[in-house]
Length: 193
Image (cartoon, rainbow, N blue to C red):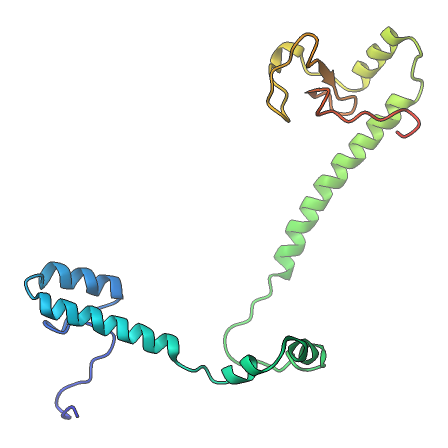
């Protein structure tokens, strides 16, 4: 037993110089740098850490037997009982993040709703008074949605393959004006749109 005059030290204490180091890594590096000549003590320290680690890992947690002995169905039945998890906890600080979540979610939902509405309005404008002549139809589509310049897009943005004259032709999206290849574009007939 320790005498009353000497304090009981706990934490990561160097066994030779009794210096208090905060973490196990700091203790290990301190021991290797400062007390490198004492290889026997170093080995015993490593053994001590190994034993402490094993002891901590083997420690029984209160109530551990209950969860190890119960089957998964019994655990799920306990979850469905009212009040199983609703006991009041007095430990810790409680902070609701619901208002922040609602603010971020509403901003994101508004953004996607605005984009969706913009696409629906463009689709409606494209379908109303659509000319049957292909040249007039292209002019009508470009009037509703400005198309990107063909020279500005050398690769398909979806598959990153280069466009070619016959095999991989450029197609403009009628709703956003972006350019993509035939394989990456999705075509809808007018009846579906």
